[in-house]
Image 1 (cartoon, one colour):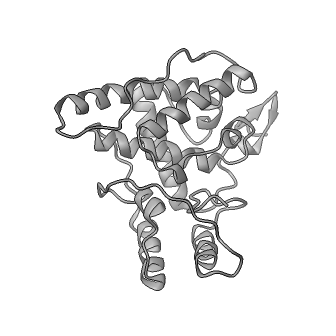
Image 2 (cartoon, rainbow, N blue to C red):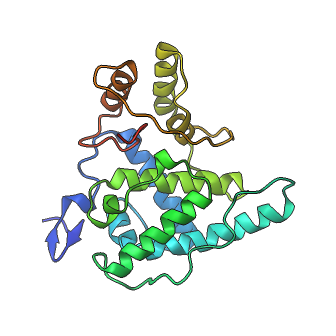
Image 3 (tube, helix red, strand yellow):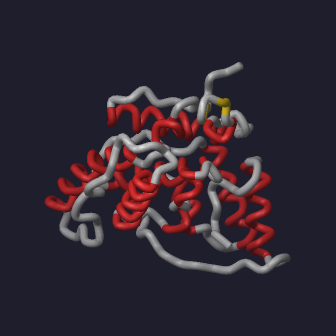
Length: 230
């Protein structure tokens, strides 16, 4: 039996990416692993990413490094307001993934992401990682951090393959409205981040658009790149 995605001595498929069938999504996971691993001096890949970041400590270490670029950017940019003043403080890098310390680590990291102006619609819920309910949501948040880091001058090769970006363009042309937050996640363009909330009704055009998007991405369960959190 494969040793990948082990939790408590047993294979746990939720810790691997075996259930993600869309190769384009897996390409983005690979790019994230290369970027994070290069920054942190860690060997990260599809098989160990979730287990390595589950207690939140490694993500807080990532924030430490990105914060250095943020500070440099703030010192040179004419208008760099609204960015975090510091990385997460007092996190516990060696706690277990199911401990209260791990939850505190994750909460500190997510608050830092918000301060970094990662779109709220791209930020995962704590249990997406701590209880392994949505690993692709976690990937989406980390890719959002990479893009914001790139905006602040840090090197990050995390642009999406053309087919993914084109999927959103097709939906925009059909419904005549941009998917601001989700399209941003797949674009290398630098645009002002916006905040907004919307509740979708069953049968509405936007609900149908979301369902169409889910079928394009072909991901099981909850969409990883959720346009809206209902």
